[in-house]
Image 1: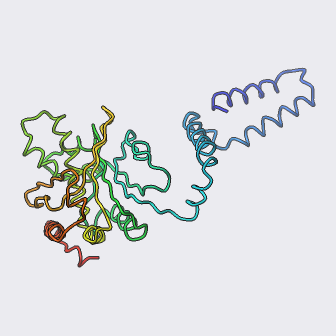
Image 2 (image 1 turned 90 degrees about the horizontal axis):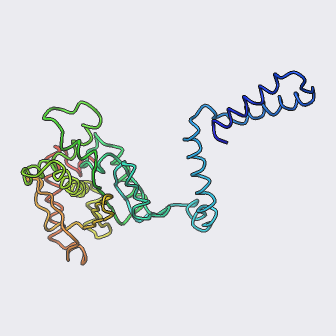
Image 3 (image 1 turned 180 degrees about the vertical axis):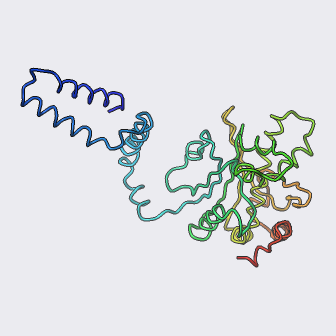
Length: 299
């Protein structure tokens, strides 16, 4: 029952009780119904539209999905075995479960502003580090996808960051992407702001994939060919999705901020060779130097 209709029913019953000539038995019954209605609605003060959306949403899920897929949900009740760790933006328009049709149990999700992955640091960003560590070492995911998207407000904020220390949570967080922003500005300074943001939306994904290699448990599994890194970009304006892989051989160094990724390479298809493993070691060393903390020493 909606909030307005519920309130109207209560008011109508109370008005009826106040009318003269009402039979004693009828009045008692109406009083009982009124009390039961009030007692049965403990969440009545909440906005009716929000409550209805939550409850109706769960009802649809329960009847159309949960009840119709008992084998799936019985298995998930025992354990989860996702194949993907997915980093996506918190933007309400880019839910990976909808965009990529992931089913329950398919993907371990991490969502934050601008789908950023910070480099390995035991002293900061422990929430992100814990998700990566758990997905890799406990759930044994075999794929990591970082998914960017069009018209990202977080990337716009990154592109507008003033040359001063961050003054709030959002500025502090998006500053992770400063290397991507600087690369875009250096290479596309002649373009308008909207187009620069488009390039930065993709370059920030590239940066996040590079940062993932600074996590020892990620690096080791990539080298051992048991983990694959992917980059994705969802264009919700035109309904398009781009996917590309990590070609470690072609990753330039962090120092000159050319963290470029290309499409699926022969190295990706055939597995990482010794040269790729060496490149990962080089990238890791540069990330360690940039952070001032050796990755292996602070495990």
